[in-house]
Length: 343
Image 1 (cartoon, rainbow, N blue to C red):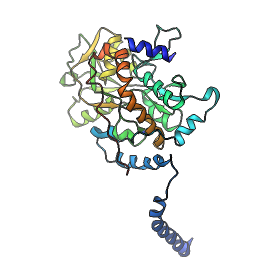
Image 2 (cartoon, helix red, strand yellow; image 1 turned 45 degrees about the vertical axis):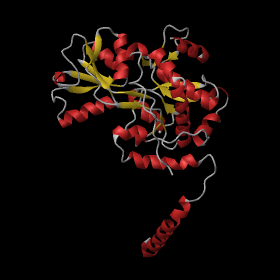
Image 3 (spheres, rainbow, N blue to C red; image 1 turned 30 degrees about the vertical axis):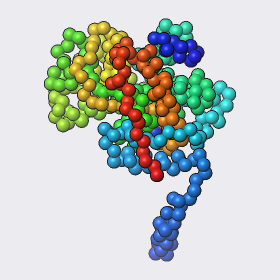
Image 4 (cartoon, one colour; image 1 turned 90 degrees about the vertical axis):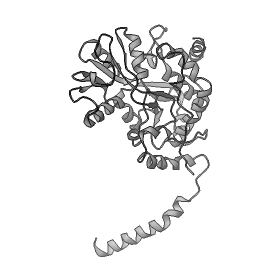
């Protein structure tokens, strides 16, 4: 199934005494801590100790640098990768949270025999599965709403989320991210007949829809509090999935949608009566999200991305996104990744 898809694509993160004892224990712990930290770790598990470094840096990072808060690539197995490989029989699959309603990113293609799940994000998932399990189709896809992406990872419902998820400092406090695999920015989507011209004063007295838990809603809320977005702009409409905003727009329940430009372009391709208004007003990067302590898995995905940038990324872009974002992929391809210094 995947091989056919690839061919097709090529075509087109108690008292005084007790207190004395406790104090003595605390002092002993402080004195021993450096020795504990220097204890050698078994080969292949060193990455696990680095996870705390990610958290420390994330607490002080800037969103403009959030995409650099990731670990260097490695093919070494560890607890997270071992757990995936230990699954047997029909359960021996990579469990990934994705979207199933984002046109050209993760959607059921009605033109295929079984309405297969396809898109740019889906291609990347198959590449990761191939590297970890040796089978690109060894994947269990789980449809995850935008608002549940982080909880799905933390609860262990999925191994990772590959779902147009922007890397931010706030999210790095909750999950770990891979290096970025796509560059985009927030844009406004509105009817062609609308007086809205972009992210500016024309949004006054307009109703805007965003996905709950999205960077779009965070940006609008912050800008309105700062006074750079008109106070009269209604940003109260939020939905679980981004595509629901397009439906609200089509029903006349809102006047505009704010989302990633890459997603907005795909939505515009689904409805010829709407269009992008103005240029992107943020710079954002998509990353693969995983549990914070899954350091070996983060490193493994980063190794996959190194090869994918060279062979696979462009073919997937051409297949799924060139029709909506243009044939020149320069603006969408992220710069060479930078990694956390861990030694």
